[in-house]
Image 1 (cartoon, rainbow, N blue to C red):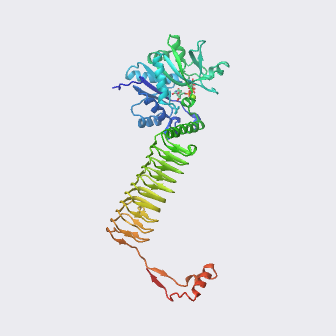
Image 2 (cartoon, rainbow, N blue to C red):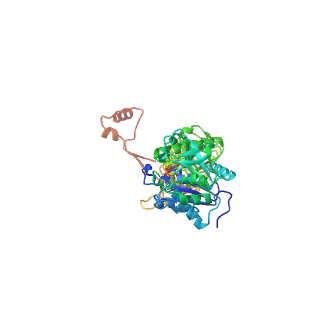
Image 3 (tube, rainbow, N blue to C red):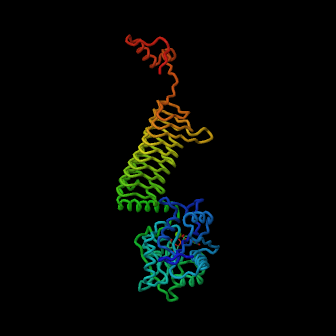
Length: 493
Ligand code: UD1
Ligand code: MG
């Protein structure tokens, strides 16, 4: 069953090229910008115009690409290109595969898997013009200062589009043409099918050129037209890593600008990186040198940064996250994180809670109002509400072989340097003294102390470090008449 849509009959995304200039073991279209593969961007733009069907033509590293596609867009049809090279052949095999499902009729759009900044709205404009003008072919073009390498748009005396000449096949005069073929088109399905049969590999590259469809369509009486975009980024492909980074920077510039227009304060757009899938509320403030990745979300009036990197983290309203590196965490409202905090996956901090300086957390649920303010590690643990975890507390969760859980109740107060040797449970309202090593469960309301008697060896420094500055000062202090040290070793609590 093919769903009813208002969009074109199909979009065919070409992705069979080798992408050798990336010099990578990863297929070119799987390289990412804005936290999403290039083909992921291409598929989202294609889907946004509601095509009846979506096909991706693959060949190079076919299995890796196919696996990625299954995750991104399981409904899309994977079409394998054969040994015949060229964009014309790529579209021909796709049309054959789609026809085999159900004969294509109406508008067929062709795009590239390596043109990541193309938007659905430009594609929708292309389709709208194509259908309004009842064209046989409508090609998306752009005017470039340097058109080297691109197919040039040939126009007749009446300025109507007569064809496309590939750079390698062009004459000197044709190479002066600045209007280029983006490689993105809307075709009438019947015109496309009929023309593809007649395309040969008789050209300088020995390929079946899709661009030859334009001349053939015109010869058989069809109208061929162009939609010219002024936004060259939307038709730019990434062939190597220099272009990949330029496209990534431009995508980021657009993403950051869109968020500012939507009511987010970005203090320094140049050092702020926001992935495409991130969601921000109005009145969020992003401070310099902050990177928001994956599906990170930030709620109203929260402040993130400076110097913060968050991946798949959700931040509640009015929360402040300062100099933090985090992933897979959920932080409630009116909470505080940082500075110098490492949030690892599974960290959940309740409203008004705090994870402070030099804390590492992992797989820990911290209740409302609880605070882990300074220097420590909380992993594989559950902490109740309004608990205060003292400075330097550690959950000793790993026995060398297995991880164990620590459960700490609500209203607990722990002394500095408390160690929870998991598995262990501390009841509500319990207290611990400084340096407590908790190996056994602590009942609610108890004070837990781990006390080894303190032993002072009087005179040790003078006896064992003679001539040192310490010994000199110790000597001076103990010979002071007002100071009367105990003559024997003394135990203190
Ligand atoms: C193509 C166009 C050119 C246009 C340029 C825009 C043709 C003949 N030329 O040139 O007019 O200016 O794109 O970038 O169409 N692909 C396949 N199978 C193939 C060959 C390519 O799927 O056999 C895919 C590639 O993966 C890529 C796209 O088609 O996504 C374009 O291929 P590429 O080799 O870059 O075409 P160009 O020669 O640059
Ligand atoms: Mg190319």
